[in-house]
Amino acid sequence: MHNIQLAAGQIVQQVLADGRNLNQVLDESLRKKAVWTPAQRAALQDLSYGTLRFYGQLRALLGLLLHKPMLDQRIYYVLLVALYQLQYSKAAPHAVVDHAVRSAQMLNAKVSGLVNAILRNFLRGRDALLEQAAQHAEGRYSYPQWWIDELQAQYGERSAAILTAGNLHPPMTLRVNRRRGTTADYLALLEEQGINARLIEPDALQLDKPVPVDKLPGFFAGLVSVQDAGAQYAARLLDVHDGMRVLDACAAPGGKTAHILECAQAEIVAIDKDGKRLQRVAENLQRLGLSAQLLTGDAAEPDKWWDGKAFQRILADVPCSASGVVCRHPDIKWLRRSTDIAGFAAQQLNILRALWRLLAQDGKLLYATCSVFRQENEQVIVAFLAQQPDARRLQIALPDSSNGQILPNDQHNGFFYALLHKQMTEDR
Image 1: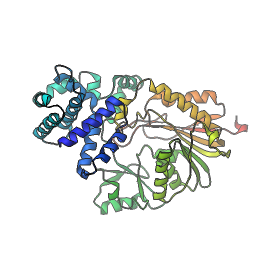
Image 2: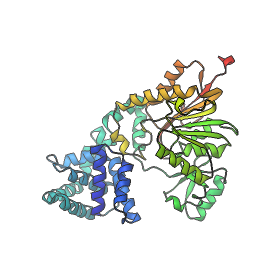
Image 3: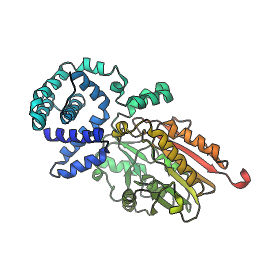
Image 4: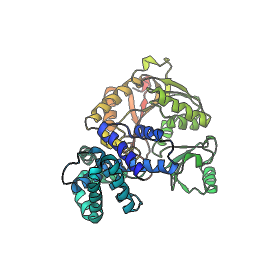
């Protein structure tokens, strides 16, 4: 266990101190030690994700336990990981403490006794320490203060539920490929494999417990994909029919592109700025037996890749703060800054303006983000409509939403959708 503690501490340190992406750092760490078993790899992922998910609380606890600053930052991050284990894992407390002491001895033997004392003091005074940590918002919710303030200002009493949902373990949700079968058919296949699931949307099945994709019947044959239930609304809202020409802007990793093609025989152009991420779109489509034209390009600069032929439908799944998907990417909470939001909003409005002229008259554009911040969502749409006289916002039906904002819960992430109609000349 101590090797996993050490590795998790290094990963968390690279994210928090160096501002690096969690998935990238975790992948690098796993590649360095290929001899780790699948169970050890899963444990490393849990410790890394979990420590970052509850970093606000863990940092508050460690602040209460330390009487002076920890000079060796490597030990500081190992302590955070060990506190996460003591509070949230099923590992035996004495084993967690013993391995943390061993980890400290490998890094800095002078402080191993201090590590032992800190962790045992936490175990002795756990309830009182947790109560003290919760006296401050960051320690209670495990988000930076600016994020908490923003949600409270926008959502009032509902902000607590949004913050709590972001700290849940994300559900594993499947999208059944309707070209290959029905949800009822696939539920039966899951039952045969002893995998419990339930229907939560027309094509969406939520598993009671996550499983590796190679355990999903027919996954590699294209029967099913993994996709959040909230993300699955995009294809339905876009209302694509057979024969339409469709643009999926900012398409990687390709889940929405594939879902559109599963729903209709359409001609799809999928673009993304990142050529490597676009390769993932190609891989997903190949697995599902689907095809689209894939182009590397910037949605905000269509003149560099557009062939001049209008699209009847456009999905503008724009870059955003990803504030609605922090349960899947807990590092986002600590890497984002309050000043980032205005930058995203400006970029999103630029993309909307650029893509609008690619849309055919009487066509529809679906604006989508995985954000819960209104600056990136409602306010962008209001600004765009004020500037674009031929754009009209259409009503859309979404559960528990009156304005296109889906808030995160135990079934899906947070998303925002706005469906815009390009009015024909005689209608204006």
